[in-house]
Length: 91
Image 1 (cartoon, rainbow, N blue to C red):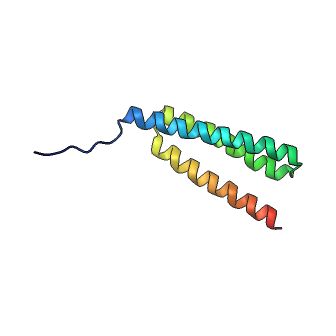
Image 2 (tube, rainbow, N blue to C red):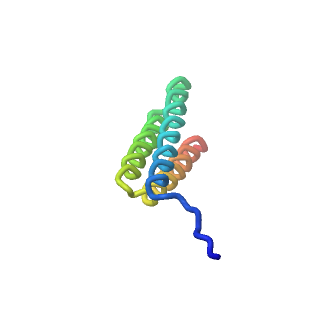
Image 3 (cartoon, rainbow, N blue to C red):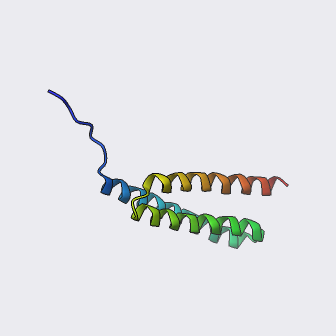
């Protein structure tokens, strides 16, 4: 008796990654509004705005079936945004 691996179907993977992108977009929107209220620098606001746009791009990539590429872009982009924000605050 052999067992087949129980993975996600491509459709489920796309929907899951679209959901992750939408959740990331919601988080970035909240952080962006908080940054606006704190009177942060324009560069900092631009970074979070770019992360917001990046989340939308990932949703579109996932919708078109490029889920792995989209997740790689999302993770890399968020790491770069957080690193840049940390560097800006440490100056």
